Image 1 (cartoon, helix red, strand yellow):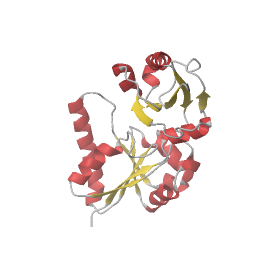
Image 2: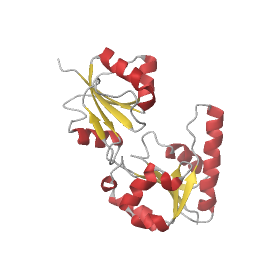
Image 3: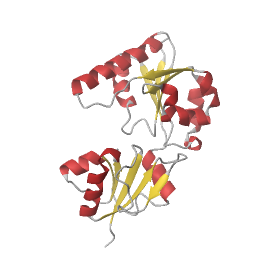
Image 4: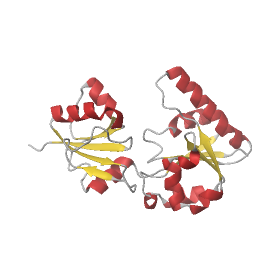
Length: 229
């Protein structure tokens, strides 16, 4: 029997926001895969360890998933990572891949899952609380009301295409282009709230575009609403 490849969402940052199912799957399996160069130093590992103390005694393996734009090199790195996962599945061992938030939202797990499925192995996604839901809760605001639309977008998409959409826009991966993101928000007349390091000890909330620092960290998420008429 071949093993199962699990993508487990550990939520946005607070270990208490991990689901019971995520905790159970981590506890029941010995092979834990974490994206990055040093698995035990990663944010995903630290979150999971806060809810599953037994994690420290498991086999925790780093999976290199570089964030590069070169499509060919990116594909090659994903193929190598899939090879790494397959070595455990072939031996009949389950492999649990930890991912921030939910595995279906801009997750590196997606690239590996496609490859593992193509090779004939079973996969399973264990949902986690998405960062934008947790950020809205931390900020004490609704994402949508009545018939409002909700759009989840990489910040780069908006600033490069200068597009706007109706309703609420959640801008993810904003940190590296924050100056341009702030300019876009002001030009579009949107009311913005940003949560940095949601659910973590160093969480910060900024309640206007003007307050948002241009040197905000990587884990910065913006909820931008249309001004009410």
